[in-house]
Amino acid sequence: MRIVALAGGIGGARFLRGVQAAAPDAELTVVVNTGDDITLYGLRICPDLDTVMYTLGGAIDEQRGWGRQDETFVARGELEAYDAPAAWFGLGDRDLATHLVRRQMLDAGFPLSQVTAALCVRWQPGAALLPMSDDRVETHVRVRTDSGERVLHFQEWWVRHRAALPATAIVAVGAESSAPAPGVLEAIAAADVVLLPPSNPVVSIGTILQVPGIAAALAARPVVGVSPIVGGAPVRGMADACLTAIGVETSAEAVGRNYGPDLLDAWLVDTADAGATVPGVRVRAVPLLMSDLAATTAMARAALELAGA
Ligand code: FO1
Image 1 (cartoon, rainbow, N blue to C red):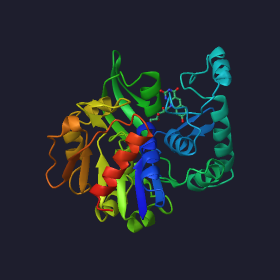
Image 2 (tube, helix red, strand yellow; image 1 turned 180 degrees about the horizontal axis):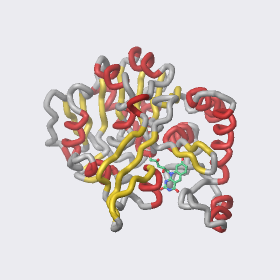
Image 3 (cartoon, helix red, strand yellow; image 1 turned 60 degrees about the horizontal axis):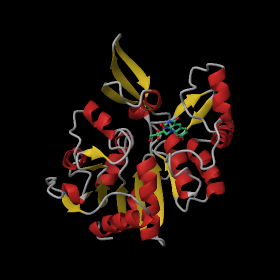
């Protein structure tokens, strides 16, 4: 069975571990959001690609959900001592090697998709990780501050300000002129099922859907989504701040309707949201808290069953 999943960071990566456990013989391709990517100190940091790679590669810090286990932040401390402008971003010492190798390969002319494949040789994630595009797409957020409106890179809004500054617009800069990375459309066309994990529906899944060609390719395949909102609140992260910015209510039903029947064939919601309806989409309620691998595996199995796969 060929499965394609679109994924962002922590929630998506965790769910994918359940997919691998539920369908160990499946061929899994993960199309990963790169709108979160940021250039700092000359390094190209790809949070969602690295979070999926480390999580499926068994190296993720389980408590943080991002970065490496057994990580240290000595270099980060030195940057703070220099009062470096981006010291607010937590660059781990082990994680730095990933960014240095990526920078070196990008400077040598390798596209991000080939850099990702090279990094995955070490981590063996058990899935093909594809950036949504090899072209630069960056999520920027227009925020309201006391001194008026400003535009921030998503990471500065998300990490430095914990998404606490009210966002009036979220823009995937460059998306309209980007192309799907090699293999993305082919994987979707060949997929028996496409899964939308409980990633951030705006800045993760939503950004991937803005790469020209991807939404149309998905419309031709069976797509099952998993709600990232349980009981009116995000399970983790700050998806509510993103949903508010685009005028969507923070509910499983509203997110499912926002994806819509052109994209979704079925929508998994938590038992707390069992009454949710999405016109034109089959809705099923199962426990959606990824408390451990068994729970996540059960969610993935429910999604695959819902797809009739
Ligand atoms: N998230 C934080 O909340 N604080 C950080 O300092 C931080 C550093 C960081 C470094 C590398 C990396 O791959 C991810 C990192 N993240 C951090 C997570 C990241 O900002 C978000 O998880 C994603 O961009 C959202 O999907």
